[in-house]
Amino acid sequence: MTIEKRPNGKYRISETRNGVRYRETIDHYPTKKEARDIIERITGQYQNKNTFASSADAYIKNRENVLSPATIRGYRSIIRNMDDNFKNLPLEKITNVTLQSYINKFAANHSPKSVRNLNGFIVAVLKDNGADVKSPRLPQKEKKPVYIPTEDEVKRLLQEFKGHKYEAFIILATMGLRRSEICALGPDDLNGNTLSINKALVQNDNKEWVIKSTKTTDSTRSIVIPDEVVRLLNENGFYEGNPENLYFALSRAQKRLGIQHFPLHKLRHFFASYMHDLGYSDKQIQEFGGWKTSEVMKTVYQHAMEMDKVRSDMANNIGNLLK
Image 1 (cartoon, one colour):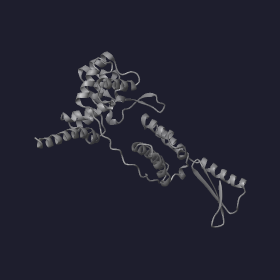
Image 2 (cartoon, helix red, strand yellow; image 1 turned 180 degrees about the horizontal axis):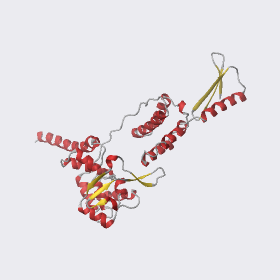
Image 3 (tube, helix red, strand yellow; image 1 turned 90 degrees about the vertical axis):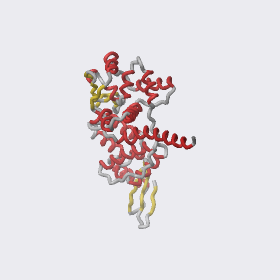
Image 4 (cartoon, helix red, strand yellow; image 1 turned 135 degrees about the horizontal axis):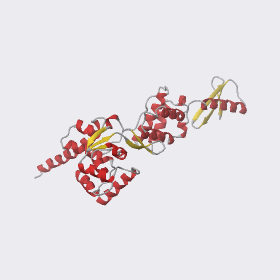
């Protein structure tokens, strides 16, 4: 605690607690007990007001019925990992300067994506409480190369899973289904060769696996699957157990084959690029795979495969000059 005389002849008492600076100005020099009582009174007033943590919790609770379990789990994780000093700040103490300072500190040892996720959540909570706050300056997005499995890698994987209990599920992933969609399928979703995709298996805030609706309304769809997949599902049943086991099985197969490791979701990327290469329209691929828009396919998946071909063609053209 400090007590300093101001130019106007008054005295300012100040103390920092949990990163928050508390101040009070009075017209006489206080005794130690008086100064302590004043600080206790001020901090008590602020502690009774909404902190960022309590406001963030209310923000989530008000949206529990409209947010996906995965989104809620992500928000809870952000709150748990936040700096305690910022988390316990009263909302009125969070300014543009305060927010920028915290973002700068967080960015020192986190990826640009994590920084953007944190900032987006903080700004949403603040604006939900009527705060006039602007989004701070953020680090540039990382432009990571997009890896898409090759046709040869996918063929080898499909061959590797022949006769495996997960064979049908690897094929469905190659047909563009998300893991959450594959693991939520049941007998009632199969009618002849038509497979209805209308739910997903995801983790909730307590890390329990629960069934919910698909990622978006566009994800709810019906597709036609090959006779072989129908046979496998009828004979071996639908997916049971922890979805992570599918990931581990894929990883072991990749290691045995000596091919690059990639998650199951990359087979969905392969599907979009491969179908585009076969001549199907963006709209057809989008509806079959359950994408909300074709933008992702055009800017990421298809572009990556097209650029591989373009690079090869360019190199070959230069090579022709050397002949």
